[in-house]
Image (cartoon, rainbow, N blue to C red; front, side):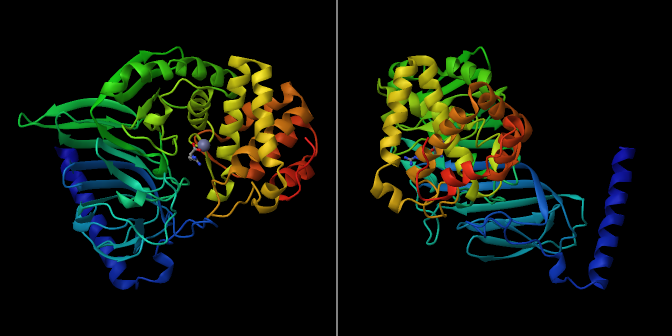
Length: 471
Ligand code: ARG
Ligand code: ZN
C-alpha cells in the first residue's frame, strides 16, 4: 500500500513535469516517431520511436456477422522522446484510445494510425497504449495481394489468419514489421462449439454459461506481427509429448484420423532439424489445418497453418510440412532484417525440406527433387523473366526463383565447401542470429568466416546475376 502511494506520487510528479516540458517545448518534428522502419520494399511497414514488448489481444468474435470487437494493448518502450507515434492499422471504428490510461488523440492516413499522447513520452520510458475498436476486417487498395497476406479471413467453417507480409494491420493495431517482435497474450471469445487456436500455449478456457467461451493463450517468445495467427473452427486437439518439444495440433474434427497420419512425422522432423540447425527455438510446435483448401501454407509461429489440401498421402505434402517447420528456425527465430532478405526465409526452408527428403527417403529421392527444381530454374524463359533471388522486388518476393534458385544456392554452396563446413555454416549462422534479424550479407559473412573462402562472387552469381552459375 505504502509502495502504491509512493508510486502514485511519483507518477503524478512525472505527469506534471512531462506536462511542463510539453508546455514549454513545442512538439517538433524531431519528437515524432517515424512512420516506417525503412524497409526498401514496404516503407510504410513498422514505425520508429518505440520498441513494442508485449501485446494483449482481446477479441470478441461474431462468426455470423463476421464482426470483431477488439481491445488491444501494446506495452512498449520509447526509443526517443515522443510527442507522437504511429501504429499500423487499417479499417474498424476506434471506440477508445488511451496512452498510459490517459485519453489520447489520433488521426488516420491509410495504414498509419497516428497517435498523439496527452503528455510527451520520454526516451527509454515504458508506456502502454490501449485501443478499443470494432468492425469487419476489410480489403484495401495498395496492399500485397498474396493469398496468404489478407489477414483475418472468414470461411464457412470458421476463421484463419495469414498476414505475410503486410496483413497483420488488417485485424489489430501493431508495429507491423519483423524488426519489432513482441510477446503476445490472447483472450478470444467465440460461441460454442467453436475452438480457438493461436500462437503459443493455451492457458485456460472460460465458459460464461450462456454458450460463449473465452480462450486464453500466451506466447513465451517474441513473435513478428505477420506470424501471429488466430484460428477458429470446430477443431479437435491432438497432443503429443515429442522428443524435442510438446506438439499440439488442431485438425478439423471430422478429418482427424487422416490429419494425424499426414502429420505423424512432425516429431522426427523436429529431431532432424534440431540436429542439423541447433535447438528448436520455441516452447511448443504444431499444425493447424483450416477446414478449407488453401493455395499455400504459412509458418505462423509455433503453429503452422495448412489447408485441407495438405491431407493427402504424398511426398509433396511431407515437403510442405517440413518446409513450414524449417521456417521456425529460418524466418521465425532468425527473421529478415527487411523484406528484401526473403531468400533467407524461403531459400532456406525450401532447401531444408530437401534435406529432410535426403535424410528420410535417401539420396536418390533427394537428387530427383533437386533435379526437378533445377529443370525449372534453368529453363531459358524462366531465367529471362525471373527477378534476382537476392532482391526480387516487393511484387515478386515469393517468386519461385526465391524458393528454387534460392535452394540451389545453398546446395551449390554445400558442394563448394563440403558437407562438414556447410552444416557448420548453417549452425553458426543460426546460433548467431536466433531470436533476432539477419540480412543476406550477414549470412555471406558467416559463410566466408567459417569456410575461410572468399564467396562474394559465388553469392553474386547465384543471388543477383541473371545467368545461372554452374553448380
Ligand atoms: N511463407 C510461405 C511459405 O512459403 C508463403 C507461402 C507461399 N506459397 C506459395 N504457394 N507460393 O511457406
Ligand atoms: Zn516458405
